[in-house]
Length: 465
Ligand code: TYD
Ligand code: MG
Image 1 (cartoon, rainbow, N blue to C red):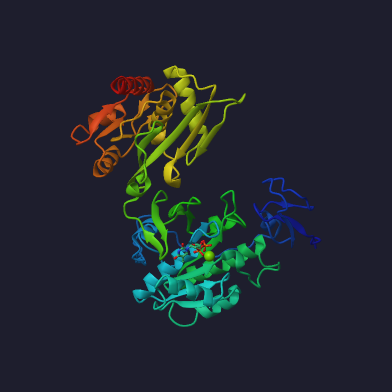
Image 2 (image 1 turned 135 degrees about the horizontal axis):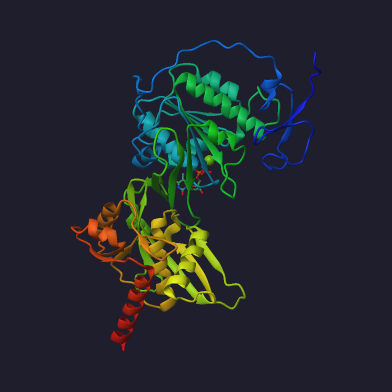
């Protein structure tokens, strides 16, 4: 008989090595290797004798399956992100920085569902029952029939949940505080988090209850603990917000049952989270339209148009290597726009510090924001104020040409709704939307954008004299 010896398995990627190392050679994670029995880890099965499996029937793609009805919370912004309500038997991981409002959001969702007659259970591993009650009272939800407990043992939780009617929704706040006896390691470790998540996912799949696991996020935006939890669950939703701003954005990062580009917008008030039905108005509030360096971008978040202000500051630098700082947008995207402006529009930015900010703490990831960013940069550099009633969208190619983007009609409609009269868009967009009430200035090349802004700046200067 072969001698059984211990294996060293990386807890992050599952790679097996035969000695302990400080760093996993496969995924370069530090301190992730732990000793396990020889019968575990990737590749361990091959070492065992082949096991004869049972056969099962294969089915066609077009067969009939009963679609389970979704559990709709009634909070429009939350249902939008989940793809139209919670899917029975699914598990959602809700990530977010401490204090962002995860517990508040979930207690509100619980109360809304319980009010509809669903059984809802809220398990807190962080706060005592009294604390959760106190919060519910402040939110005016104390009367909702939500079942509460402060527990951390996964086995006890599952045993309790299996009694009585299957809950429609179970909240585990948070997965990092849970521990399971099936795993032989101390609570709070990566192995414990993974083991607890596995047990709770198994519970969700077998019982048909929807489970939400709360996960804390580290400063660099990763859900603390193993990344493996992220691929074990059906959906990963993150709750984000900028310090100092009242509003919070709920964003689907992964969703097996819906689109991943939808966002839900909430505002943190003294009475909990309020849904924001019209985010554009919120993001544009407090706008100083009479200052150079600000352009309004007509963006899309999933199926919803959202207008945000992009602010730029271009100032002569005293440093050898000028500063480039970006908040809410991609740094390499800014570098690209600056390079295109230098190469194809003749601007000299090499001696200037450049700062770019998406107002209100919003994060923009669409290439369609290129044109608005470029307009803000040129406006700041030349000191020419952009028209207050104009929006911008379009993708800039490395050649300097401005390319069309999707959903132009929706973007124009939203801008018109918010009182904007004109749009600077790619040439093709103007043709497609010829009947839009918006005045459209088509912009085929970055050089014409720069020329237009410079000319309007000169006109304004002459008018002022
Ligand atoms: P919480 O939901 O406890 O955050 P998390 O669970 O993500 O750690 O929210 C805590 C913050 O929310 C706290 O700083 C206070 C604020 N808050 C309000 O502003 N209004 C409210 O009605 C509530 C309940 C909380
Ligand atoms: Mg909390």
